[in-house]
Length: 120
Length: 110
Image 1 (cartoon, rainbow over the protein chains, first blue to last red):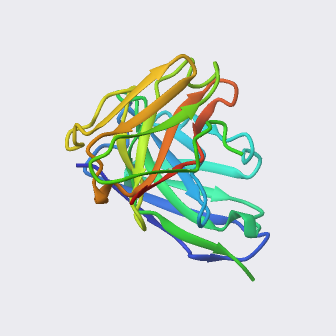
Image 2: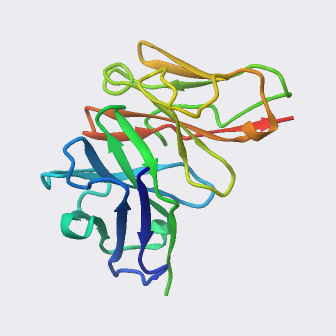
């Protein structure tokens, strides 16, 4: 069974860059069957898709965040990462990494999530 | 404002059947399959339904879903207290070239 685990700083200062890593176990991150994505959820609010990366390195980003987001893949470490630049308090949220499966047409496994607070 | 529209809340008593709607457009639900995710309080979301109406193994058959045109719905029959959660629909959107979620529906079991 695939497992995903987010890691990274829980506190980021305004205007700085938020950096998170997701470690994948129980499955190959190089498989062409999956995309690897990031989704966030502000406290008490709904889910917002941030973007995804394919094993080839190709990416799709949420247009509303595209200018600030970079998602990258490190197959040697079975990890993928999120960088979100120029953060503000509005970026405070629980950040989830997730797997999107071509077979089921979307997200089939989620990480447990990690809270990132943007504050000075 | 979410691209997919869900009612913010729904409720029912134990044993009842409840439905949750999800309305989209031709660029998302009208062109792609719909997924539903369940988020129990304080936990990460979990896949509940994929490919419009398919349940992953382990999901009780009390949960069912359908899609028609640019709308979809989730039905829960024989409502149980442990079904109290937030439910989200999701689909790919061609106009945004990204995945979109509904705003979520908070289900309360009275």
